[in-house]
Length: 242
Image: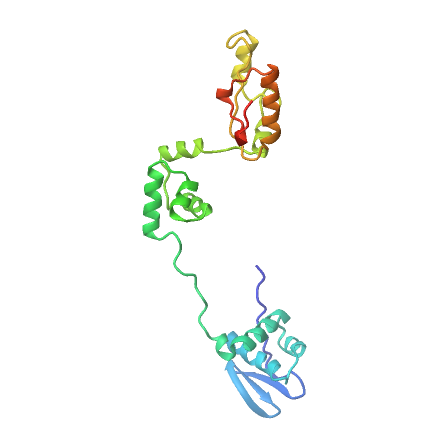
């Protein structure tokens, strides 16, 4: 994260322009208009520094480039100070910083979420029931504010629906070649043990596989008698039947 460049107050008198100057002495910085002192603040009082230099610019007695050159600060610091001065005035530099309000997961909500988790609910179901974001529940699980149980783990695993990218990754890492994820079934089939038709087909839910073409092909195969898949183990989407 970039660090703010603090203003540099050199000893003695330093001119900002022909009309303005400042002087550091005994830990205090005094600003002069000609020979008249107009403002003073402690050397480490950054908020007062931002306030006075922004006022110099807003009143038209100094340019931003002159302020940057005289104090050795970043021009972005001056721009932000000027914006704050125009929007809120001098009081804006001394208001306490705004803090975040109470978190979403207060103790009562955590207790409700833990009760649902103990009953085997998944993070998605908990977020829907308590009107929370799924990421909020998952962050609470990672941080330990919510504790998983065996029942909740089994429920979450059963609710997982793979996508195309997940299937491609799993298929590419199969031990007996692309897509050959049923290693034991293939080994048994190679020695004549198991089903007479070879390795049993296994279908799993998917969340991003388009259903129109799949259902159309399945219907054609069923009608032609070219597919041995029973309807009881494969359900077409969209209400299309063979």
